[in-house]
Image (cartoon, rainbow, N blue to C red):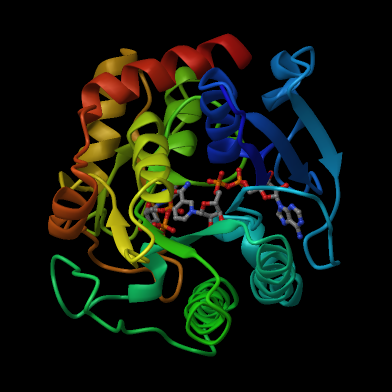
Length: 312
Ligand code: NAD
Ligand code: UDP
């Protein structure tokens, strides 16, 4: 069997660590690159004994060279508190990271996948969101460093493809949760579970009537690998997410029920530019990748709750 050499940037993060593990299990050689801003060695420590796994400390805003067949470009903080902590660095990571990784892909003739996001749709005026929707993003708002950084990265990807024939894939990831999320990263699923397990107040922002569609991490990893292995003429962008839409209040109630917590729900101000609704249209993923999500919210939350019980 010929082993593929695969570079995963942001490989020590939540999604990246699941992806590295899956790629290794499939018999590939994996190079996990990370600057450990939001990722942790802990997420990949169990892979370090595998001779086909290498952990590299590097920042994607600087060029990086390695012989590789495929690149999954995930490096970028993903939770609002982390990407807003240093907005300029977040944009540099998306834009310069994309340029550096696309340059590498061009040089070594590797296929490259960009982890884009449903945030490219901003606070959407079209519901559910198909890939053809151009989005509704405030370019100077709190979320702009992330949203516009990811939008610019998509532009770079498509133009490296058109001008330089780089083989690209763009995946637009909708809210994803699961084991190995950082307990303090401020995202809603991790916040609610940690609060519920500690019988602390559950912090719903706004009235809790805003919606999100939550995807379990294993479904995402399956979608990413199917996209990478799809025919070269299919570049995406393609939405990968679970269309089951819930209000944030419903999520809070579900977490309380599944943990048997004594927590009560409290309401805090809604952050600015917080999207009111989000639901993927996954027709293209179904057609082109024969992909649809398999794990429902209760099932995924139970696994995630078990993980948090083991670390807090
Ligand atoms: P995460 O914060 O756990 O992982 C991001 C990883 O990138 C971390 O390990 C971090 O240390 C690393 N990183 C950040 N800046 C870097 C830099 N300059 N150089 C090298 N490494 C750097 O987040 P995640 O949820 O695992 O997200 C992974 C990717 O998927 C991100 O690109 C994110 O935008 C995208 N995404 C995630 C979601 C989601 O719900 N989890 C949704 C949409 C898109
Ligand atoms: N949210 C909340 N309480 C929290 C954390 C988040 O009500 O403790 C809300 C947040 O305002 C948003 C939704 O949950 O409407 C999802 O937030 P998250 O940061 O997980 O993802 P994103 O807004 O980027 O989709």
